[in-house]
Image 1 (cartoon, helix red, strand yellow):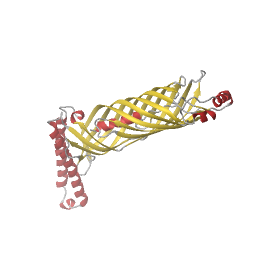
Image 2 (cartoon, helix red, strand yellow):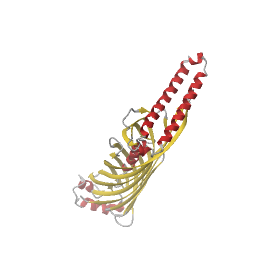
Image 3 (spheres, helix red, strand yellow):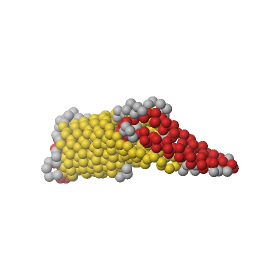
Image 4 (cartoon, rainbow, N blue to C red):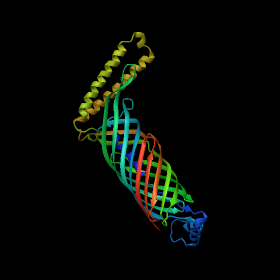
Length: 373
């Protein structure tokens, strides 16, 4: 159950990486005077961007107004899970935050996207995102049970990994401007990632500021751009869905884990009762000890109820499902970016970008073709 929403997050991180690093550049300097004069004198031949003729008349060198890019992405990120509830075969949902703890939840995904874009205004690029992806998610978690002193101990660790596929659709815009080859771009987009195991597409908002410099090479129109920046992701926190029980626990493995869980819970009950029975009457009447005893038994009762529900689903594991709801967030909303782009000419560009720091890593590479519209 956890894997599907983690996978959706990995895809969100990937699909958000979609903008091209192009910009309208204000040409400056004496060595560019002839080029600047030619820009101002020439008639702008395309319908887009709006006010393109006025921008060139001011000495701005505009990219071609339309483009199509194909990009490959990979990302890996740690995820925080909170307010997790699970149920089996449409039955009662149980809050398991207190007894199920996640040691490490890592979502990794790779994606191929196609991004059509246009320059609506000389300093505003708008684009769409269409993509497909594959992902694997690895969960390291455990069953934690209390003793009489309410000290929780991990008694049943478990690990699982599942592969998924999904599609996405998004829309974005990039306000950007350049002067003398130096540029600033403030990319932002929204996307909806459709994962079959989720009740509804996962929503995300991505913001990625970049600051860089473009260096012209000897051949006309050929250049290399380099930049640094940041990447911030915000995802809708609430997630609901359902997944086949056999996708979470391969056939034959759940029964043994449930039986082991029952044994661990029984042992924890014995520890709690032994602690309680070892107290004097005065100690048992102490409200602090009473609260510890009641809280420990409440956690153990919840663990027992979940194990009973899971045990009931074992006989029909091929047809059984796990329902879940949770709040989730990426461990680190921000990470750092470095990137570069080689422009063969104003039609063709190749780009490479790497994101790092914190708990997220990302790599993007892609080709872009531009044309006048």
